[in-house]
Length: 178
Image (tube, helix red, strand yellow):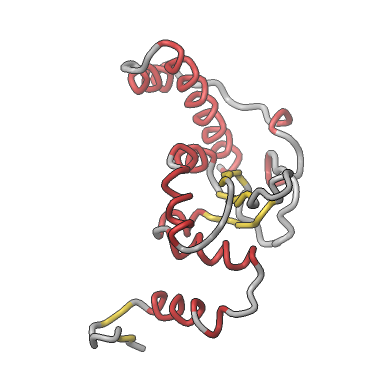
């Protein structure tokens, strides 16, 4: 089925659904549902493909807007999106979503939708301390060194640690899947 916009030009079916949900079909949605819908509408295929859950969390202080928590299937992507947090906050604000912050977490895609808790190796609930992460190769360490070479010393150390941790988690996840 082909959809056309008001000017008669072909339009994406997702755009038509978004228009409907923004109108009469969107009435009565919970704040969490509106926030999740806005997350999917505000971002591209890459973010949508790797999102495993979206929910609101109370900020913990009275009068402060809630925090949007976005679960992703990759530590590397969670880290990358976290560095662009202001961009995502502004996209959501443009769509009328009032949140005080956005937090990216990792939750592997699973068949069940329970999603509570932290997931360790093999999708079992646990903590990151439960994981035995593989060491990086000299080539991977050199890659981190090259990537952080132009940074000031204090920032370089923090960025290097974060990159190494992210690479180790990604490497560990890939090893478990093989």
